[in-house]
Length: 299
Picture 1 (cartoon, helix red, strand yellow):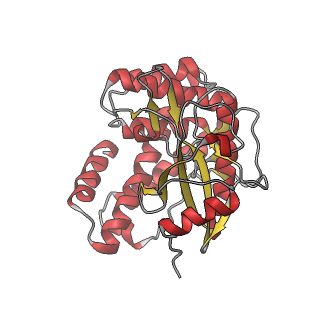
Picture 2 (cartoon, helix red, strand yellow):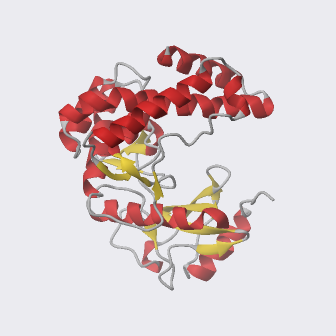
């Protein structure tokens, strides 16, 4: 049975009970997130410039990974990069039960999302991702998901939708596995989903923050960079890559040699995810256009 996020009134009640505060109205930001105003003097937070917070919900089955991501955000934020760190509940817990899942209260990271197509924003994007990777070098958590070169079963029915898709997943995964065995790669804690929309540029300070740590895991750091490059169009993201190499822990020669293979794998995995949506319910026009774009990048 699929878990269902709580209603806003239940979120409000959980905040009052577990964080012992008097929140304002919970404004939905999506299916499982809300924006809320709380006087930060009621909370165990460091001095802040805003009383705006974000509440996020995760199903019970995902709790351990969700909390591992919260710990990573807490670590990155302490290192100086705004990461939407969690505000711990009155008992010190990261989350509190709500319905058939858990809620977390996060500090709001101010600013606008980065624009994927803008070379200037791409430079901010790469620099912030590199800084996050560098700040996480000594972070460990037992519940971080481990990287798998191919998370999509080669016999999955949606891979037969296009003749190129199944072979692309198998072949790109095989190339990356060979690299992981034969080459000295830089491993660490990955954000997991570093799309442009996860970054926030605050015009008032010029600072860039990184939010959305639910997919955090360990593995080759260049797979995170490949995710970002794919979100930037798959090609022509030189500003992003160059800024990442300057700020991050991955040497430039490793990036030059390995990024193309990681990008090919990330493209194939993304194509498989889009095909799965189309196979399940026909998809949207955007899904079909995205599958065509990804096919062009793989061929």
